[in-house]
Image 1 (cartoon, rainbow, N blue to C red):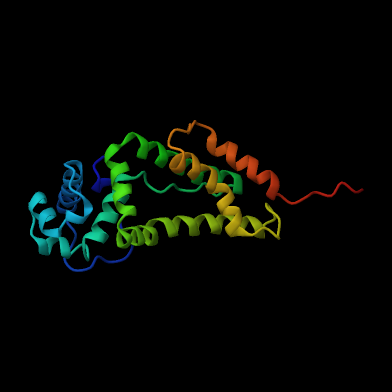
Image 2: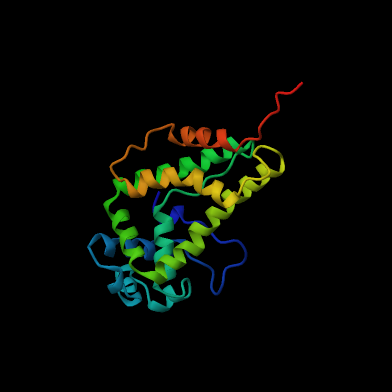
Length: 209
């Protein structure tokens, strides 16, 4: 699978001319080629990308408003796709969400270029803000919706702060994958985290007869 093959497609009609998958693939892979050659984000101009991809600048601007939006799509294409939640119960959904984070952590460790991309992105506030708005925020919203439904149907206590609960689930995986790059990310870690946190969030069952 190439970078463009894994890129999520927006809903609704495309703006401007019909999108050419071959052209988009060439542009995304052109950006990755430049990054692999060590070109820093600050020097990654649309003109340079167009020259590397063999397209005109207007072709890029018809698809992306600028290099920040383009760079975010490159990162999204390089990541694993967002998971489809089973919807069977809170535990199953949370395990799938955390397993996706574990896989991203493993990928960022094994891919020197992806690790470099993340580092550059964090030093570019506009790019990081765009990535946060289009990638991180929707994922967080999805997790909060899973927790909200669980609170409504009694899987977790009614007094649980959902923002805090989400941080309690996601935090340990982020610490392992981002803040402790030498820490293990073994199979079954998602289940271990979910079960440990859920133990404290479930409603207390009365033992009175």
